[in-house]
Length: 451
Picture 1: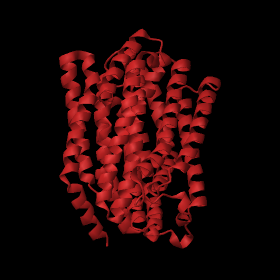
Picture 2 (picture 1 turned 45 degrees about the vertical axis):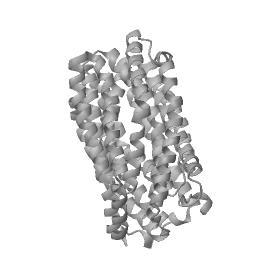
Picture 3 (picture 1 turned 135 degrees about the vertical axis):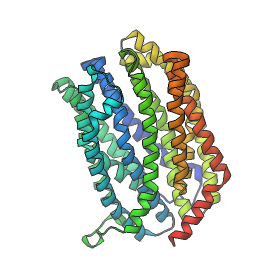
Picture 4 (picture 1 turned 30 degrees about the vertical axis):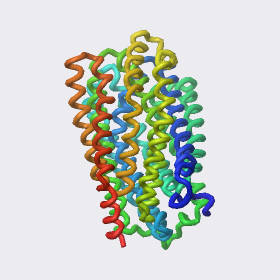
């Protein structure tokens, strides 16, 4: 069994982070690839208005999906800490308890999403020309979010145990299926934006099932019998203690993103399309940071469980090195290739011009912005989740404030500066908290309370 998991409490740190992070990055890149394929196929076969509708729906969808991501993060932190402490029995109990919590959160997201989709699009100031397609897309996504939860939940479990290979393999299959279904349900069977949504839902469900099957097959500690199927209320509270603040942090950040999207939606379709395409490139850049952060989060969780805080600090320094090496390549490439990248997805000269402006601005700031994930993961995995919530609140306040201030002062061009300046503010808060050492005090206190 040990060959299928990774104990990060021993051995050289940099190889651990790289070996774990590379499959995570590849998985995220495959996700981005099929997102780009979504954009390309929708834009090519359905036109710019359908593309704008899908872009708007994606912004609204993230609000409720953040609760899902927060929960799976809570599961990952608790399992990583128990595994680092060598308590395999508690790992199994956490796995079982997380099933009940995940089912409850999924039901909540499905109901809230389907009932609130129309109102959400209204808040986003979606135009009459786009709202029908955007609403259709959201309804299908929320109706099928159990598949999304399944994949994210079991992937979080696997990664907390140091296995990032199985989630990658499942995601590759899912990505290829998503591309095939996109072509089938949009180009061959003309289902419009509903086809794009169905392709996403079906492919995510399959990746979750594949991941779950292999998890049971290769990890005996996760094989549960009927007598094991009891929720441990204390562990469920631990999961929610980490997961709820994380979900809230992600949700409130998405609210600020929605405020920016709502302002963008008041401009012409060419600008909305440009932002949707450029945002895909921006999200691609975030995959580097998320891969580094996910790897660091697992490392920190296991070593906090083992009580080795000096090793945690060494891990953060290694994460800095990896981060600057990756963005030292990514940022110049985006700057130089902004125009041809935009040209791949739209033939509108206005959209290309808008997109190039935004990509050249955010690529300049990514070296700073990406370090947010390092601070989020060190603080979250050590139990300092309230401070990650504070960082999220700072993003809400600054992004919403800057959206109205910058557009008032600079017009549409001010929109491109909102996120970069917001990243800088959040990074300052995270850096101050980390170097204060407060996270270590909280981790030690939580370790004593858990005994």
